[in-house]
Image (cartoon, rainbow, N blue to C red; front, side, top):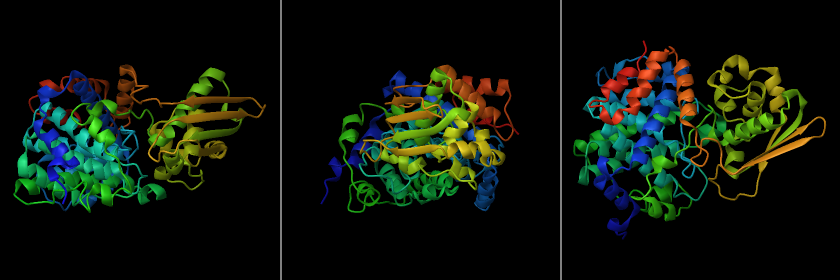
Length: 457
C-alpha cells in the first residue's frame, strides 16, 4: 500500500497548509497581481462573445441566490454560476495566460472560482493573492509532471484541483476538510482534447464546468462529505488515469521553493499559445526585412510535436472562430496582413476574407527535432518570397515567456485593448481604476470592491 505521507498529494497538502501570505516573496505577489490583471482583462473582453448568453441561459436554473457577480454585466447569481460564466469569459477567446511546462492555462478556472467564492465570503486582497499563488502551484506542478501528450484538457482538470486548493488556502481550510475537498474535486474533474481537435466551443466551456466543480467540492467538504485521498499516485489517481506517463522531478525540485506564478507566460495574441511563435517570428522578420504579404511564395513553420498537433490544421473557407484561433495558416495570414492579431480578427467577416484564406494556404507547419510531447518551443519561421529570397528566424523562447516577458507598458496596452473590446466597452477612467485597484490589491479589505470595478452595465 502507498505511504500516503510521502506521496505527491501529501506534499501538496503540506504546502497548502503551511504557506501564509507573509511567506510569499515580493516577486510572487507582483506576478500574481500581473496575471490577475491580465485574466480580468481577457475576461472582460470575453463578454463580447455571443455564446456567453447561451452559457447564462444554460445555468439559469441553478437558483436565484445573489452571492457573486458576472463580470461586465453585473448580474447577481449563485457563486458557482458566476464562476462558470466568468471562467468561460476568461478562456473563450484563447487570450489567457499559460504555464508552458505544464501546458496549463492556470488562471481561467482558478481566478473565476476564487473571485466568485471570495466575493461570497468577503475575503481580502491578500487572501486572494495567497489563494492564486497556491492554486497555480497545485495546478501547474501536477500538469508539469506529465511526460506524455495531452489526452484530457489539462487547463480544466488541473485548474479544478488548483482552484480547490486555492479556495482552501485563502480561507485557511486545513486537515481532513482540505483533503476531502481535493478528493471531491478530483472525482469531478473533466475535459478532453476532443473539443480541441474539432475546434469546438466546448473547449472553453470545459473551464466553466471545472470552475463550478471546484466550488462544489469545497462546499461539500465544508459540509462534512468525504472524498478519496490518494488522488495523484493511487491506482486510479491522476497520474495513472489521466496521463500515460509522469516524472515527479520538476514537482519535487520546485514545490515550496519556486512559486510557479512567476513562470507563467503572457499571451500577447488571442490565439492558441501554439500559434504565438508563428506570429512572433513573422513580426520579427517583417520588421527586419520589410517584405509585403503579396511578395510571399511560402511560409514554413518548423515546430514541436505539440504545436503541430494543436495548430497545424489546414486553413479552410468554412472555418468557425474556434477552428480559426487554432489554425496556424489563418493566424499567420492575419499577422502579415494587419501587423498583429486581435480579437476583432476573428469576427465572421474576417474568417471568409479571400486574401487571408489565400495567404494562409501558403503556410506549412512541420516537425522540428524536438521529441518532448509537451514543448511549446523552440520554433523556427522561414519566409520565401516570389523573388527567391529567403528569411529565417529561430526562437528558443516565444514573446510573453518569462525569458522574453512583456514590458509593463505592453501588459497595460493589452489590458486596455481587452477592456475596450468588451460587450460594453470600458472608458479610460474605468480602466485606470481597475489597474490601480489591482496594483494595490494587498491593501483591499474586501474584494467585492474589485469586482464592482469589473461591472459596466
